[in-house]
Length: 206
Image 1 (cartoon, rainbow, N blue to C red):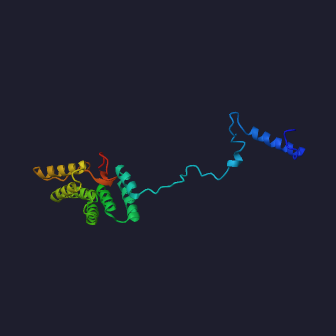
Image 2 (image 1 turned 120 degrees about the vertical axis):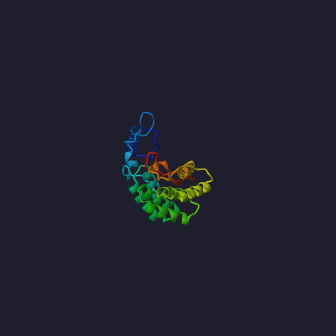
Image 3 (image 1 turned 90 degrees about the vertical axis):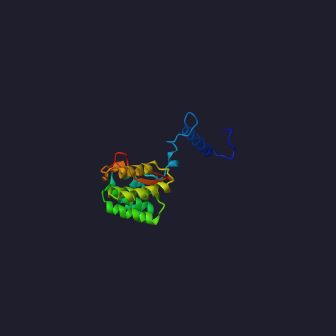
């Protein structure tokens, strides 16, 4: 073969021809490399299916809020307790614990948790609002009204839920006789989220 330099022996030339033929065969008709022919070059340890390489630890408060919205109050309470272990008993966690206890009908535990929450942070609006709901269901209408008024003022009147709670409480007080509400869904619990206060329960909860 005249095209090859004379320094190549006949055996070397044939070896080069074989290598070139193999490379050509490894290419598909459109000029791309056939992955099956070159697959050994790409073999390696593959991640097991279903395993996310970036795992995220889910916050206990987030889990608890979702369970509250689903009406799973016992499970929500457990999630909030986990949050307490992770974050400590801050106002946010204490408010959540009190709210779950309220939904479970444990009014004294709920009141205790919420009072501690507001003692830790006296400007924490969700705890004040949810404490007002607890006081209302205990028949402490006058204090409930004051607590709702405080929560409403701290929130600068921005929360429709807190305003609705205050309005309903005033209506109960101004009625001919006090009667303890028997429909918890008429009064909204709130939580903190993304800079604003969100409902802690669904409209048909209770």
